[in-house]
Length: 138
Image 1 (cartoon, rainbow, N blue to C red):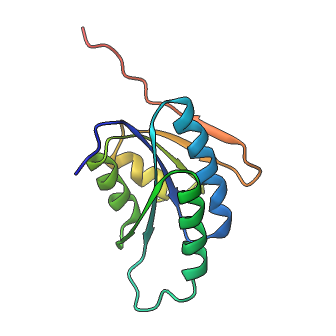
Image 2: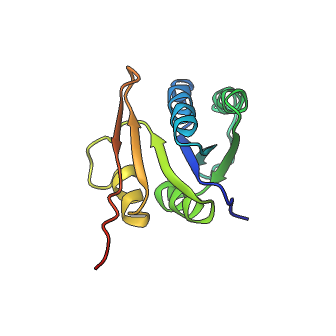
């Protein structure tokens, strides 16, 4: 199921302004000669009508950027994202900003997938990257 070509993954929530994450991930994918993928992990519920417009909009932005968009339903977004990353040859994720908590999405994701580089995109479109440094073993 995994891709041979490395990918950059835009991790979005159900908010219109997550389009900035997809657009930044698209630029990175072009620069790094990678595929672009988009992922949204939603909490399972019986009614998604309140976020349907946002998800449809983000799907449109993903498609215009040349990406597929996957929506997963899971109670543990960091775990679900790390599982997706590990199965799909993702070398970098692009997200919104870290909220500072020890149990935040990025802290938990990094525990599950510590060898994946992370780029965070602020509301003003400033991007901050944390690259994995793979030291040579002697």
